[in-house]
Image (cartoon, rainbow, N blue to C red):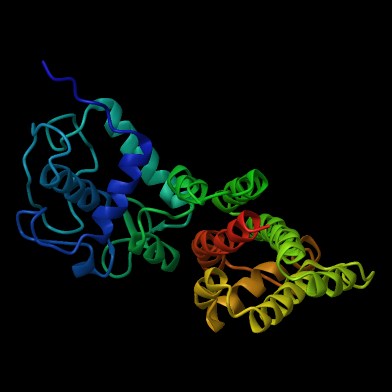
Length: 312
């Protein structure tokens, strides 16, 4: 007899988000979706469509049927393999993850109109709309997000550590604390860029190396953002003098102007700048965008770091 693996909390949470985002008409007998109702409704609507999605995706052997009800009505009570194609323990996880999404601000109690101001009625928040657009790598999916980050070739363990701490802060709604940790990760990467490029110059362009090293030793060169700007300046000088370095020239287009601005912002998100509330105040959606961009940032910057190290 085939053993069916129980769905994890993470799988159920992603299925809930996918249900909220689902736009086709084949997981409800009447073709209803949350999009049709401005992303609000009742827990009964969510659980009914979740059941339809589980059946549609053939995640488990089918023991329940797809069914329909009037939107915003019906019971919140779930029974295993009866009105949902899940076991009792998986149903408990559905309740857990629904409440986690409320705590994390993805959904909120109450819905506009004739529904009601409290649960079982709810609506998807602005932040929640960002979440359901990108189900697979968001910070609420900490394991999935970190898995992608760790796949970056050569990534420093301290970068992973600080991002992990940042995710914990983000999921606890400590937004500025989460950005401080992103800033610390950015510091590690900027330092790696500086030191690896310095070693690279020593091997490739000794004259430029001597000038660059002298500038880095200047006592005024004490901010990560200044070091990063100086790194970009000397990278440009090196490429101007060494057009034959086709490897670095091939990487350079990845740092277009818009990317450079984003990365320069990361280098400014240090402990000093973020600790002054008047300088940077982050809301949840802005912080989310930084987390999403940070994976791409790491992947690109480590291509440069790895190139410098290989050719030093």
